[in-house]
Length: 409
Image (tube, rainbow, N blue to C red; front, side, top):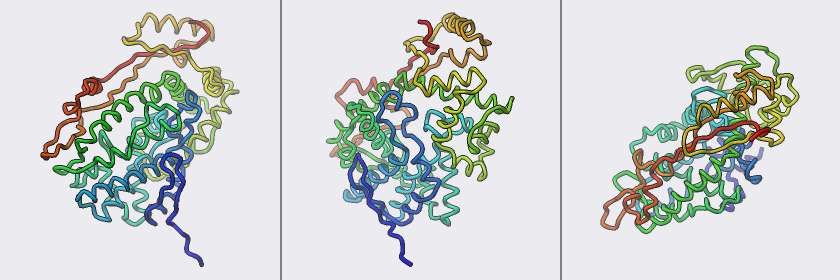
């Protein structure tokens, strides 16, 4: 019998030809847990704003593996010791770092399994895969959970300037067509080094880091937190909330077997056992979209209206402000919806609501991006930069919004 060739070459639209580096990583990619990421959109509902944004978590994970291999090669070239086992563990960890995302990625985080982050679910998946692959993911899990003695390995995986961000900014910029987010990820990787067990950027790479931080800010306000995408995601959350209410109180709701489980059961983190994880592993964007299409004719007015709005892109109106929305304004909008739709106040609150959205491009207080000088000293990029706006990027920007139907201004 012919042995299957597991050393594949993949044509990536962002980086060109990339290779799968080992048989273990190939087998992990082939596993149904990972193949599900082909059916999980990278950017939630952003395709309603940027029609090209239909790429998936599968694309992103493979791109991250490609960049991580480059980073390891650069650090080794500069004299940093990284064993073959550590390299494979790093590649496994970055491959699986987003495997816990549910349908539409961040849009439905905490909705399907309440109060549980995708990172926690990713760790559960890695544990399950480690059992299947007889302990071969031990070192990857050690790095993922920040238990490894080499801090720079953990920083490559998750930090202010990690491989995850270097891929998603460049990839999301490519698929949305938003040129402001197009960073030079290879230049930044080439400038990486290690000092005092920490990941640093050499002095001549400071302008690439500045560009990265500015691009991150622009991508958040122009793409990730775009008001139309924001209100679409809020509609999706409210659709799931209403469907869950109906499933648990009236039992008059139809959906796929796997979605039905999460509609009828409220799962907490301590209840996320292997059986629940297996059900979650079969849930993807298609379950949710097909259910929403079905619910556009549901007898419940609230669910039917919300689903029709999302499917037909006839979204709620949203207004962003620099200060909190006055409660009188909210009450006024609620009253109008109650009158127009003949709804109770509780039902009207599905269509009229306020909230906040915020972004901090650089969280210097949590962990710094350090610039390495030729004399061996390091300095925080915000202090090393001659750009005043980097200090401003360290401050959180908060915006307040109110959303309501379009039948009045």
